[in-house]
Image (cartoon, rainbow, N blue to C red; front, side):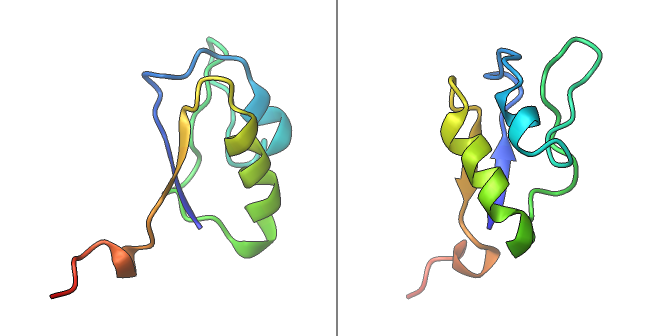
Length: 73
């Protein structure tokens, strides 16, 4: 699983930090920061998926795997 956090959309509700605090620490103003490159280990996927689904402004999105980024002929 790969995710992206759009900080321009984040309104600082902190729902993601409650579900997956190691992946979404809050900055000094209470807005989420994505810790790491967005690659989520299988053990962390349930918590990160819950954070993605519960984000009230949809600032977290799942990215396609890098293997599927390129179009096949």
